[in-house]
Length: 600
Image (cartoon, rainbow, N blue to C red; front, side, top):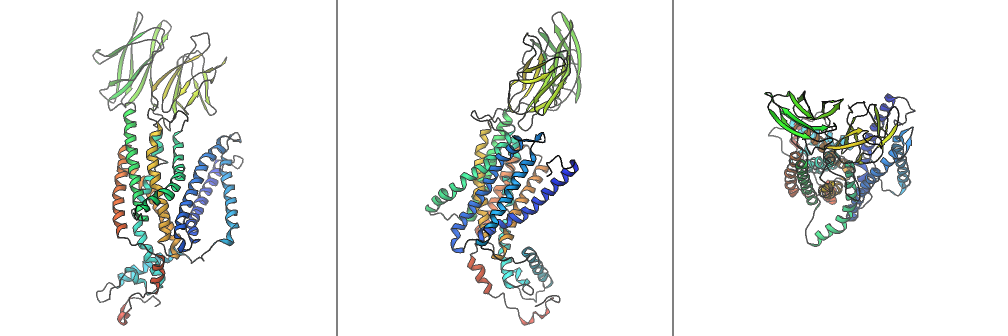
C-alpha cells in the first residue's frame, strides 16, 4: 500500500512503510524462534537422525526462498511498469499474496501436527528464577548457611524442581553461545563489505555479465548445493573413517572455514588495490591535458621562478595514457602554464588544490587559443557504475538522454557537463537533441568502474560525433576471484548454522525449545552489532579489517573449542530422569534463611 502513489503523499507512504516494517519485525519474532522448534517437535527421540535431516531441509528451503526472491522480485519491479514507474507495489504485493497462500497451506495440515501445549511465558519464568536464585544466594551469603551443589538450587524455595533443572540445562548452552556472535559478524558481511569489494571488480565473465550486487545470489545458490553434499557425502565419509564428528566439532570447523574465507577476501582486496589507479597524496595533484585545437600545442608548466616543471607537446585530440603528478608547496596553489600554438605563445594561470584530479582543456578561440581548468572531483565511481561527462564544442546547447531516467544538458561553446553514472553496457545510439536537430551518439562500451570524457564535435559531414577518452581505467580484476571466498564461507555456514539449529533443539529441555532458538537468533543480532562497532572505530583499510575479523574469529574458535571440549551433551533421558532426583535436602536449621516473602 505504501508503494501506491494514489494513496496520499510522501508522509502517508512513509507511515505505511514503517507500519509494514514493524509488522515484519513482529511477525519474524513469532515465526523464527518457533518454526524450527515446532518442526523438531514432530519427531520422536528415536528419530533423531531424521530430525537432523529435517533441520538441513529446513535451512535449504529458507535459502531456496531467498534465491527465488532475489531473481523474481527485481523482475516484478523493473520489467513491469505501473503508474508510469517501476512497479514496487507488485514486487511487495506478490510475496504478500504468496505468504497468505503459505499460511492457508500450513493451516490445512493443522490436524496432523503434533502440538505441544503452550506453557506460559517461559522467558519471564526463566528470568525470575535466575533473579530469585541470585538474590537469595546474596541474602544468605553467611558462612553458617550450608552450600548448595549449584547456584540455581537457591531458587528451590520458590520454584519447582523441573523448572530449575530446565534452567540449568538452558544456562549451560547459553554459556556456550557467548563466542558465537563473531561468526555471524563475518557471515553477514557478504551483503555489505563483499558487495563493496565487488564494485571494484569487473563482472564480465565472457559468457555472462554479473552486476556487483548479484554476487550475493551465490550464497543461497551454494547453500542448495552444499547441504545435500555435506549430508549425503562428506559427513558419511567422515563417519566411515571412524571420526566422531560431533555437532560442536562441525561448528568449530565452520568457524575455521569462515576465517579462511576472510583471509582470501583480504588477499583479493590487496590485489585490487595493487591494480587500482594511484591516488594523489598530500601536497600533490594529478593533471591531464586535453587539446581540442586544430594543431599541436606545447604545454609547459612553470614554477615560481618561471622555471619549467614539465613540458609536453600534445597533438589534437590526443588520448593521454595517464595523469601527470604535480607537487604543491601548500594545500592550494596557482600554477602558470605556457601554451605554444603555431606562432602564438600564451601564458595562463590556474588555481589547484591538493589531492584532486584536474583536466586542462585547451581550445581555439578565433585565431587565438585559451584554456580552462576542470576539476575531476567525482572521478571515483561507486556500485560498479560507469561515470561519464561531456564537453560540447557545438554552438548550441545539447540535451542528452543516457537512459530512461538519466538526462543531462551541456552548454554550448565548450560547456562541460556534470558527471552522471550509468550501468555498464554498450551504448551504440544515445539520443541527443539541440534546438534545431535530433541526433544520436555512439558511446561504445562503458565498462565497470571506468570514467569517460566525451567531446561532442561536428567536424565531419556525418553530423555530430563523440570523441571518447577513458581517463580512469575500467576495473581489471575479474569478479570470479570472489568465488573461493563465497565457497568457503558458505561451506562454513552450512557446517555452523544448520548444525547449530539442530544442536539448539536437541540440547534444550522440552519447555525451552523456542527460548533456545530465540537465543540462537540473538547471537546473529549481536554479530551485526559487532560489525557496526568495528567498522566505526577500527579506522583500518579494508584488507586490514578483513584480516582483523579473520584473526578475531580464529581466537573465538579456539575459545569455543576449549568450551566445547568440556561440554557434556545432554541426552533427553538425562533431562527427564534428573527431575526425580532431589535437590540437596534442606536442613531444619534453615529457618534463619531470609525468605519472608517466599511461599515454601
